[in-house]
Image (tube, rainbow, N blue to C red; front, side, top):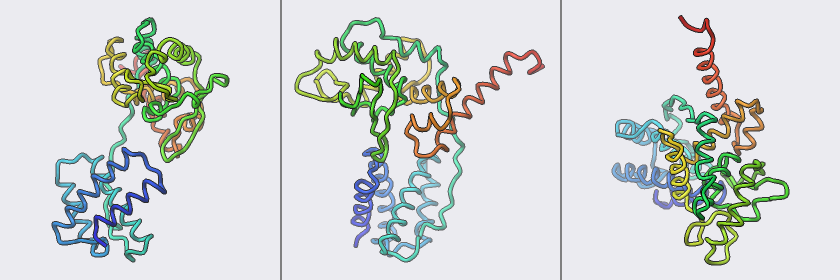
Length: 299
């Protein structure tokens, strides 16, 4: 079996059995295409022909290239996954990636805005009566209120939002579902959107919650533009995205005394370890406040 066919079968496994998102599958495909090209340039045409020297050579090549550490780690993870799959399927008897050396990446703290700036951003379009502004105001309120990923929000349907319980059903990574409360401000913004804006956007029957001007699903790019526009109106001088509001959601909850496990559930993280990065932010903020406020903090 040629390497391209083996990679195709592995990607099919990731899509069907692991249910990875389309964006993740695209990244895996690019990584494994690069790996396949490297192998073929060294006359290796099947996973069964790959040894540790070949995988080490690939690691050396990408490490010497212009890739970031994060990209290199992702590429190695893609290749490692392929070889573990080959071992499981009994195509090979030895994992040729067992000698991979991981490059430790310094953890980057998510950039969360202070509460005051976040509220200024979210409220930037609150008073507007323009149809698109009403929609975008509801969108940013919803993102901050729920901590949802933008990919989760643009695919929401009307039935996912339960007005009676003030909650929404979100479909996260790996097909996992969670129910998250929706705050009163977001409820009010959604009510206004559903009554005053969404009917004007409907061009054909649709059960989608957020619609674009053509009456189709709102794109991720449109959601990014909405958040950026609100940030500009609020005079926030840094790059802001829908994911920034997710970081703000988590950070502000923890700063307000929320339990880490609860925040983990709300964010839809599989492991609490992923959520723990936000505790570093709150600890950092405490140190900053102490340094500037305590009379004996510094000379």
